[in-house]
Structures are given as C-alpha cells and as structure tokens.
Image 1: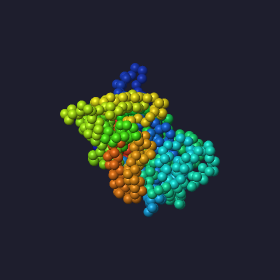
Image 2: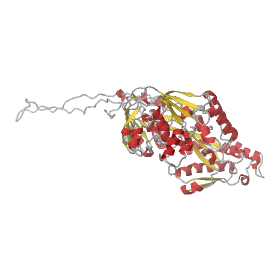
Image 3: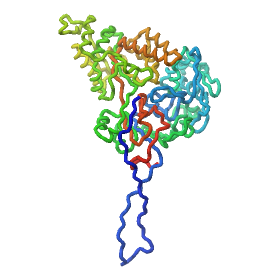
Image 4: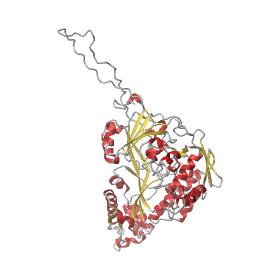
Amino acid sequence: MRKFFALAALAALLLGITACAPTLSSNTPTNNAATPAPTSTPPPTRTTPTARILRIGIAAYPDVLDPQRAVLGAEIHALKLAYEGLTNFDEQGNVISAGADKWTLSPDGLQLTFHIRDDLKRADGTAITARDYEYALKRALDPRIPNKINTNLLYDIKGAEEVDGLDPSKTKPDEIDRALNNVGIKVADERNLIITFKKPNGYWHAVAATLAFFPTEKKAVDRDPDNWWMRPDAHNGNGAFVVKSIEQNKRIVLAPNPNYWRGKPKLDRLELVYFPGGKGMLEAYKKGDLELATHLTPDDLAASNADANLKSELVRAPVALVYAIAFNAARKPFDDRNVRVAFAQAFDREGWVREVFKGNAKPYTRWLPPNLPGAQPDKPGAPKYDPKAAVQTLITNGYAAKDSTPDKPKVDCAKIGEVKLTYLASPANQTRFGFLAANFAQVFGCPITLDPVSQLTARATIKPQISLQGYLGDYAHPQNWLSGYWTCGAEFAAYYGYCNKDLDKILTAAGAERDQAKALTLYQQAEDLILKDAPAAFANYAEAGALIKSYVLNVRERVGAFDTDWAGEWGPVWIYDVDLARVPANYPPR
C-alpha cells in the first residue's frame, strides 16, 4: 500500500483580538468643545473554529440511496458512511469485522454463520439483530422491489436465483413470500444468522460487505417504499455517521453516530459536495471551500503539478480498475491463439497510457490489480510491447507474406483477414480506438478499419473482434475478478468467446477452499492460465489524483486502491480528523 505524507504544513492560525468599537460616553464633549482624535476601527473578529469539518468534493451524485437497489459505484461512497454490512474491507482490501464480530464456515463449506456483535445499534440506539440482516438480504432478493442492481451477487445462496427470477405480475404475493422464506437465509437466534449455499463456498465473508447486507430499517421502508431513501431521518443505520441533510445533486451532510460500535468518530461533520463531472472542484478547493478534492481531471492534475502549494497536497494512488484490449476468440483471426499473442506483443501500453489516459494510469500486464489480495504485480504477465516479436510471431505461425525474408519480414494481410474495430460512437471512443487502429496498422502494415456505430446499432451488432474491457470489482476478492468474469458462460467472457474448462476447474476448487492461503494460491494459478491463453492485451490500471489539505489528519496515509469516489473512502473514517490549530481563516467556525 502506498503511503503519502504531507510535504508542507499551513502556518498556525492567527487568533483575532476581540475589541469593542468606540462609543460616546456621558463625558463626550459637545457643541464647541474640542473633539477627541478619531480612533481607528479594529479588524473584524476571527471566530475560532470549534467543529472538525471535512468537506469532500465528489464528481458524481448518487442515483439512489437505497442499499438494496443501489449500484456499487456512485452510491456506495455515501451509503457506507451511514451503514455497515456484516463485514467490511480496509484500505488494503482485507476483510474486517463490522456488523458481525465473527463468522464460522461449516466443515462442508455449505453454511456460513455470522455472529452479530452484542453491542450493535442503530444511530437512534435501537438494537440491531440477525433479523435486521435477514430483512435486508430478503429485500434484496424480493422480485417485487423494482430496479434492483447486482442481485446476482447473492445467487450462491440456496434458492436465491430462483426467487429473484419470479415474475411478480404472474406470481401471487403469498407464493413469493413462501419462496423468500425458503431461501438459505435463516435466523438461528437474535445474534446468529445462517447462510446456506448451493455448493461449497469459501469466499462469502467478502461478499457480506456488499450493499445488500446494509441493514435498511424496515419501518422506514414501510412508511414510503419507493422514496424512503430521500429522507435523511429514514437512514437510521449502523455506520460511523448519520445523514443529517440531503440536497439533491448538491450536498449530503453527515454527523458522527454516537452509537457507532467502534465509538463516536472524531469528525463533527462530514460533507459530500458534488461537482458534476468534476467541473469547478479544483477552484472550490483552491478557495478553501473543500478539504479534499477527488478524481481530478488530467487538466486539474496538470494545474496542480504546476502550483507548488497544490503539488505538496497532491496524492496519486492506483485504483483497482483494470483495462484490457480483449480479442474475440470466437471470430477470425483471433480464434488463433498465435494471432492473439502477436496483437498483445504489438500493443503499445506506454503510448496508450500517455495518449488515451493522459497519464492517469499505469501500464500493467496482469489482470488482478495491485493491492488486491492474491495480486502478483511484479510477476511477468501478458507479452510486453515488442513490434519485431509481434511480426515474427505471425510469420512463424503461417501468416508470412510470399516476399517475406529474414532481413525484411512481412505479414500477409490477406491471411489475417479484415480487422474491424466496432465501437459505440463517442469522442472518447474515437480517441481510444483511433489509437489502437494506428498502433496495430503501424506494427503489422495491415489496414485496420474503424467502425463507429450508434447506440441502437450497438445493441444489435455482431460482437466486435476487438473490444475495450474495463473492470472494477464488486468486492475486494480475487474470486470476483476471476470467477465472475472469466468462467465459461460468464457474461463478460461470453461477450468475446472465451472459455477454458481447465480454468473453470481451478476456479471451482478455489471458490470451495476453506483455507484462504490455499485459495489465493489457486486464484493465482488461474490468473496465470488466463494470461497464457492470451484472451486480451492486458493494458493498464487506472490511477486517481486527489488533493488533501495538510491540516486533514489520518487520511493521506490510508488512501487505497478501492477508493472509487474519494481518497480515503475505504479507510478508517472514524479516526479521520482536522487540526483546528492549522486551518485557514475562511474555515467554517462551526
């Protein structure tokens, strides 16, 4: 984990001197009496700040603040402040306790029992029991709840997929209720929740940190099932903070939860301030209206690096978001592994990061991102950029032109066939695929066709030969990055025709393994096998930039790869603090 340290400190706060304006007394001369010399007016009084306030600039406002309906992107950054699942992650991706203080997996791997901590309470002091988590999970599976997202994460539970697939317009309510009661989610007693799986499972302690497990309060939902989440007081959760106000598309204000099981957080107020697309965020930070500005644009990063004061407050960190230039193994010429290897060798990662990501990324030849448990960032992965080797790979494997010679190797473009880059038309995609077309054409001397299509056409078009794939996992565990993506028939792998039965066997064994050290070894073997198959030119991982004021304490050192919305998001927010002796003059007094 990278650690970042402040390079400069703000000057100590100068305290204002309290003084009164001069007044007329009964002895003040009048009429023709001499007038005393005028007294200078003192400067305005500086009120000493008394509240520790952390204002965080964020580029995307959440669509819905309902834990069982929210996505794992723009919603979780706000919801995880007010709620905690049965488990949680630290900034390094390690599973830590949360609503449950311990969990036990049965010897056969089919049942996982979570023990709810004895002192667990909602923000209003109401006790939280196993029934609260049962309600949340069954609500996440209830087919009558509209617009649910990521329910498939719960399909490991016995009966979960079947109940989620019920059509509420064709199924009677009592039948749905019976189906929900029959899924593998059972309350043993007030403190123990038992999850029963369809097959042995060794990774579900990580899944238990996801949004479906956030204990939404039933009575709040019952009052207004569709819109309860818009009311601040309806978020009576168990997280470190309590929602105090919600200004749509502008600001969410939170206060410390006095009943948080770890103890009351140090901050007196935390504000999430929204700047759509990041516009205006840097200026707000420079004016002192924010303590933390996140996911800076390339232009903002350039401006920050050019300013000595901003540069000292700049934090750069990897993000667990990986990209790959995927080859469709079901379409020629990429049904030939040799062609896939050659195109991987031809891919210029350095140029890709420079031209497409404008430096907000790092070249990377593997799939599991750095800092994910089980990742092997220092181990060689996909072939590195080597144009000569790329051409030689094709020539050696039957794609040599008739006039190719050892001194002047030449690829037969007719044997390669047409290579068409089909993509959804947009300025960003034009840049991305324009780079790829020029890159491959220059290396192989063969034409590469750009084929931008409309949204409507894209839905019906043949699956492209080459596609850009980006993946940000649902939870910090290699199972999600591998089994959920690369197994035969998985949505993503199916998109470009990848299937390896040997890989599936390894991943099945890894998923059932109770010993986490052995499981990680199996996941590493699986990643190595994927890389050997060369289904893609693994390209890069993303890198985020953030600005953090030097008077903000305990955040900079805890920036992690899973901070998708703000730097420090997955760190111990309950210890984040502000040094009031060092804040600027325009810092809020309370």
